[in-house]
Image (cartoon, rainbow, N blue to C red; front, side):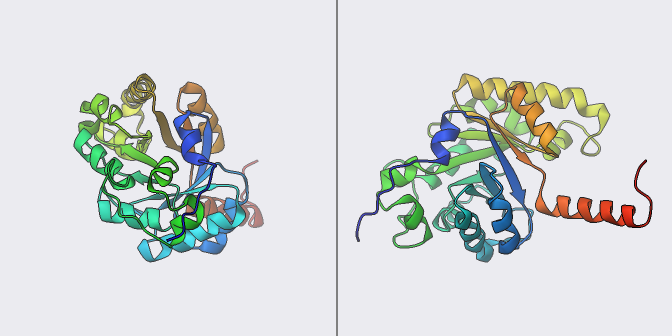
Length: 263
């Protein structure tokens, strides 16, 4: 097989340097919409393969849509810390994976190893598929260009946070604030009774990640919240989602058409 080499490590290198990055979240299985959003200038586009409606058959189309604009890196949130799913996501051309519900260092190590080829990990060399076109065919070089990001969403993960962040080869931790707030006692996301506890946990996560020299991200509802979290010490933030903004925009236009817009 002919070796394909790409000298620019791109997104993964920026993440490891802890550069401030802003991303956008895709829940809908619409490559046309994904392609349009990918041309807006976000640093990365996260495609939800866990809770969204884009499942494995659609991952490749989503990554093709992102790559078509040449502006953003495509990431896939896989359903779990399953090496098979992680391999499929990366073979689809993703520049990294987001692994949900990681609760301990062992699950973090499994995720990292699934992103790396021998001898650093367990990933199978994909050959002439989508990933080779963007990342090359030299295993060590591919590994350098792929980011492994694990989510901190549970009380158990907080208990093992230091060990998770110390995992060799891990590039970043990423807060799922809805699940984390529920784990900390919130009755619903945004419950004011759990707000202080959640903020304390977020400070602890950013400080622990910084101490271990890895990036730390969070999902946020809007651009203003992204700016706020980046100023607080997070190094990347993902804005809302396509399905949320679709509903918000449609609702606003309906209210305006019926004369119900806020004064």
